[in-house]
Image (cartoon, rainbow, N blue to C red; front, side, top):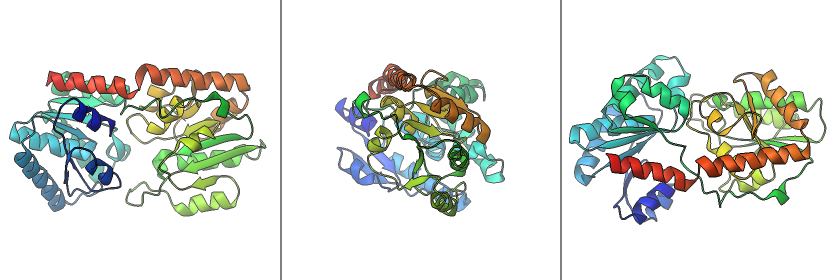
Length: 351
């Protein structure tokens, strides 16, 4: 939303092409032309996909934009192809490699091939973490020349502000904020909670997140209910304003092995001066500086996650607060809306 508003404020006429979702009404209330695009995130049906890319081609042909900004794997691929055919420059923003690079089945392989083919046709590629930037640049000489790093999607550091007076020492609350996907480490979080709660009193584990039943990696909600019934975790439905949950937490945990850009929940937590525990994978390492503003653990490794949680539990109150303050400074130095928009502005001017 911030990017769209800044582009409008800078005098650009903005058209948003997207599938109708929970955010559509907010976009329509902005001074933009909203065009719904019938595309299905998880579809692999060739006919359906041909219709989606054809519709996008016709939208671009009608609107005749000077520049296209696209986001996520499928829109990046289709927008790059349509833009190339219409001779319209495309800036493709890779927000993470996602399901296509987490799996080895045929549909994931096809998605990887189509992504690289599409990105090759883009004018510029912005990638939201360092490791994925290097990976895409290594694809071929064309990709190497046009690929650059951008520090996530940006965050309003005033909205996600730090308030040291809200930090509580007891109970120690560990919160996972994520969609209920296996690859987000939800299962590992639940297992770690059951182990920690047998050794430590006055420790709370919370999960805040939505079910994503259309995703092949969706975790069974029965597993969540069983953990709640055993008293190992608390579960909360997603909320519009996550800040009260972050503010009430001692530490935000994300044991993900999902190939995303830079997890927004970690940036939000750091901006609010909360220490974080995350996996040692692309994206997480951009915001989690081991032993400075949190701890890194190994993916798919419950003992490693438990060890990181215990390290946090053994910190003094002063050490926890220092970790939180360090995270806030990292956000102010690298991840604010203003810093990220400046990169977009430079890239747009260079195309």
